[in-house]
Structure formats: structure tokens, C-alpha cells
Amino acid sequence: MTIRIVTDSACDLPQYLVDEYKISIVPLSVRFGEHEFIDRQDLTTEQFWKRCDSSPVLPETAAPSPGQFEAEFRKLATEGATGIVMISLSGVLSATMQSADLAAKAVAGDIPVRIVDSRSASMGQGITAVACAKLAASGASLDEVAELGIRLAAKSKLWGALDTLENLKKGGRIGGAKAMLASALSIKPIITVEEGKIAEGGKQRTRSKALAFLVDQVKNAGPIENLAVLHAQCDDVDDLVASLRAVHEGDIVVGDVGAIIGAHTGKGTIGVTFHS
Image (cartoon, rainbow, N blue to C red; front, side, top):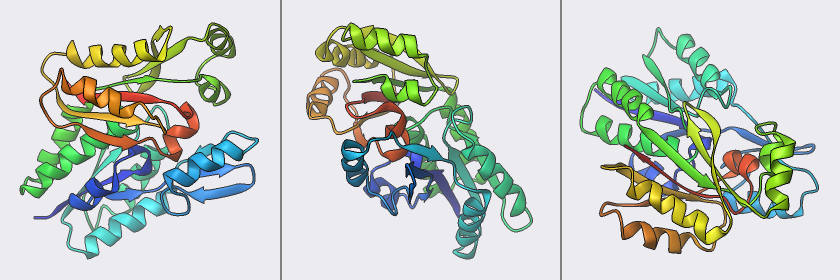
């Protein structure tokens, strides 16, 4: 029995984890005006942020087609997979999960595929994919791996401190008045993901207070597992990790916020995610 894990490129997983656990990533696409790129293939994270600095327009993102997922599912079947668990970007935030579901139906006669809504994004999605991949590698069944994914998705927490609300405003995910007020007051907005949706998580007056707020979420969450830090070109990420080590004894995975999530949150975003 060989169960393989598939996710999409909104997961922001570091490549070393993708390679170590043989996780397949189906990419979303990102567009700057007339120029479209396949995430993680045509455009690296570093190239994405450089293009953001020089682009007069904000990037837009698009979900993979069902055909992209079907091709990946069939490829894994030919490589010997006996079942697939797909850990998707939150179904509320993207049509990605719908595409995966259509593909799963298309290959149903050849290989069983379970679709799990991560109810999260970025490394919040990524840590669930890695946990499922670890269980799959131990020889667990398709249903056991899928059940773990569903269970962890329900326990997923993500908190992020943003440098700007401009991207979320232009993407239609928050109101313009709220973004303008935050900018005028130099407030560092905090977002969270609740039931798969982006929600207001609070606000802090300074960056250092925003980082302290993130540490407090970890400290006050009780027993947690699979702690990860996500950041978009932040030179203070090491400071956050050091502060987290003072309140958490386990491993801390650090992931770069890539094109898909970064297009909506902007540079300077930094956050924590875990299962509790």
C-alpha cells in the first residue's frame, strides 16, 4: 500500500520538506497585468517579490484547472500509488479544492483520491500536508491518512501580522475604509483564519508588539504540535523564532510566503501556525 500526498502551491512548504516526504504540489498561477506565471515553476518566491517591487499593478492569482490535478493523480498512479490524499487550500478562499474534486471523480475508476479541506492557507495548510505525509510513510491506510487530515484541519490555527492591508483591500477580502483607517493610524493589523475564512484577529501599534502578540498566541494555546512560522521577506523572522523557542520546546519549521498567499497579504507579513 502506497499512499501519496498531494497539495497545491498555496501551502508555502519549503522544498526540502516536499522532497523528504515526497509531497506532490499542483501549482496555482499568478498574473501581473498581461504576464502570467506558473507558481514555483516559472516564478520562484524570490523572483515574485522582486517583481512585486517593480510592478505598477498588484498580482492576481488563479486556481489550477481540474486537468492539472488529474494529470498529477494519474502520474502518481503510474508510479505505484494505491491511494491519494489531497490537502487543499481553504475551499472558502479559492476554487482550487473544486478543481481537485472534479479531478478525483475523473480518476475514480483508476485510483481512489480523498480531498481534505485544510481550512487554512500558507504553512497552515503545509503543516497538515506534512503530518499526513509522515503518517502515509508509516504504512497507514488511505482512510487513516484522510481522517488525520480532517482532524488536523479542525485543529488548525493561523495568526499573521501584516505590514499593510492594501493587498487584501484590492483583492476584495476586506473593506476599503478599514484599510484606510489602519494605514492612517500606522496600525499593524493582525489576521487569523477561522473556519477557512480570513478574519480580523486584532491590531497592534508597533511591529514589535505584533510579534509579541504572535508569541502569546503560541504560549497561551496550551499543548500544540506542528508549529511553523511563515514570513514574506521579513528580516525579523529570526527574532520571532528565537522568542518562540522560549515558549515552545519542539521543532519550528520556517516557510517563505510565496506568490499565491503573498499576492493577497503583501510583503512584510509574518505569522505562526500550529495544531492545538
